[in-house]
Image (cartoon, rainbow, N blue to C red; front, side, top):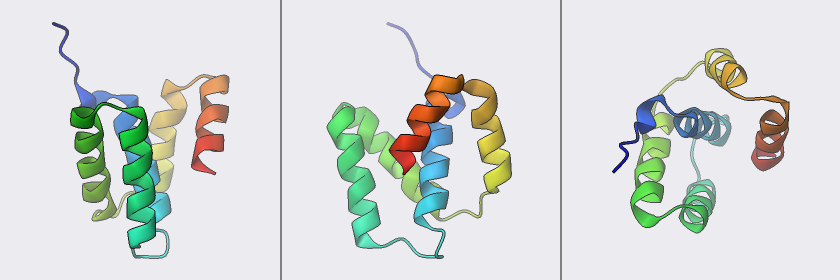
Length: 90
């Protein structure tokens, strides 16, 4: 069995960006929360989607620096992946 460390993964960076976008107005609405939860549960198995959703909610409670987090993602993604992420975030 392969062990996977989500803490160092691209998915955590994406969850941070989702959290920053969702809380841009200094609150997280039920609609925003449900949108992210539904999206995650639609594309990942339950154990992974639950973990990622919990991380998303945790990141929403933090004051993350957008430049710092986007810079990390920028170094991990190629052009096509950046474009795909931009479309998904929009």
